[in-house]
Image (cartoon, rainbow, N blue to C red):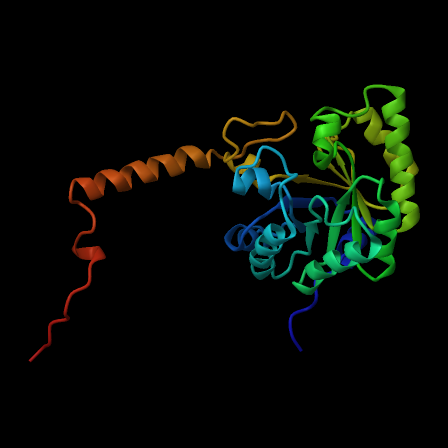
Length: 271
C-alpha cells in the first residue's frame, strides 16, 4: 500500500469537528514541503503565482501551462496536506467540456481539487463537479475580474452584500465543497456564514470563519511594495536575502570565496 491519498474529506471532517483550518499558497517544491511538514492543513497553488513568481501586474496573463508547472512542484512537496489549484483565466469560461478537461489535468497531477472564481460560469462549474472533480468556490473580490472591478473591499453596501450572499447560495447548491471569501467586510462574512453549511475560509474577511488562508509571499516579506492590509508579514525574507547576496558578492570579489573548505582536492594517501 502506498501513502494515504489526500482528499477534501480531510477538510470536511475538520468542519464537522469544528476544528479551525489553516491554508497557505505555495508555488514550488521547497515551500510546499516546509508548509506540509509544519502541519499546514491545505495548500493552494494560487494563480497569484503570476504576480508573486512571474512578475505580472495581475493574475489574468497566467496560463494553464504556467499553473501546471507550479502545481507539479507543489504536489511533490506536499505529502500530507491536500493541494487545491486555481483554474487560471480562460481555462473554464468557454465550454463545459474544455472546463472539465482543464480541471482534470490538475487532478491527474495529484491535486485534491480546483478553485474557481465567481459564479458567472455556474453551468461549467457544475459540469466539473458532476464529472467527479471537487471544486472550491471563490467570491468577494475576484482578482480575475480586475478590469471590471479593480481591487476593492466588497460588502460596503446592501447591493454588494445581497449579491455575494446569493453567490454563496448558488455555489453551495451546485456542489462546491468550500468557499473562499476574499477582501470583504466582517458584516458580509457574517451574512454568508449564516446562510452556508459548507466550510467558508477567509482572506481579508475577518476572523470568525472556518479557516484562513494567506499568500505565502506576503507572510515571508517577498511582496516588495504590495502589502495588503489584511495580510501579516511574519518575517522579512527580502532583507535577509539581500544581505546574503551582498555578502556572497563581496566574498567572491575579495577572493574569500571559494576557500579550501569549499574546494575539491586530491586526497592524500597514507603510507
